Length: 68
Image 1 (cartoon, rainbow, N blue to C red):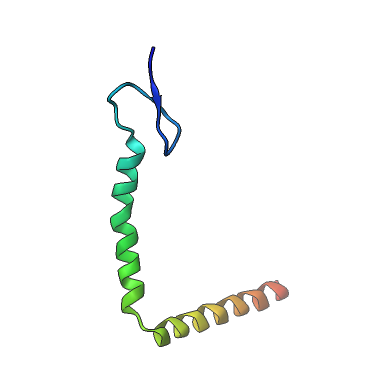
Image 2 (spheres, rainbow, N blue to C red):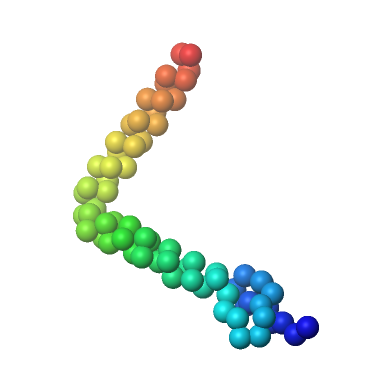
């Protein structure tokens, strides 16, 4: 039986069959682009503030773990 291999994921495909991996990639792209849009709309000061808050929470969690 003749078959071909998908260059993206290595799946064995029948002649003329398209692989599902390309459909999955196309479906996941809009989600990433929404996240990218959100990040681009935030300015650097907001991102820096968010980073500082996350860093402080991590430090607080480490201090709490020392005493338990």
